[in-house]
Length: 178
Image (cartoon, rainbow, N blue to C red):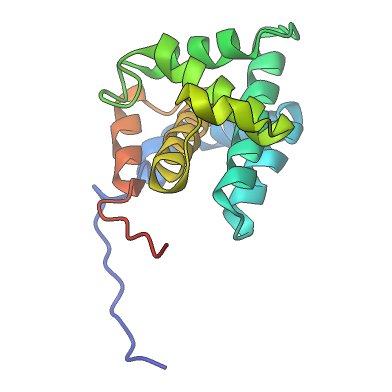
């Protein structure tokens, strides 16, 4: 219902391309297959957010579960301190994604408060001022999505400098219709 748009091919637009993994492509594929099996639960939670239009609250729960599952498998740490897991992941990728996790402790606390609210839905938590709605929740989910992608790129041994390209996925303009 619209004119065709010519595809743009800009090598700097991609997080990585074949030439980046060409010299060791067999090992790269092996790492992907290994990561796909190892992090199957985390990837399933993440892919749910990619392949389905979800409300931001449900997207938040899927992304937090993906990160918790990833951290648990990666570190063989199946403890119950969800906030610590998110903080450790944010700290690990803080340098490569400046501006997203400048305060990993506050970021992790915000993620925990929102996950708890959207999981257990107690209206009293709204009064604490830490529960995000609308655009703010959308932005938090963007950060969680980019954090998960950075974790998987790390598993694939894609250069950490490439993570900065993930920032291009962040929305520049958001319009609320409510």
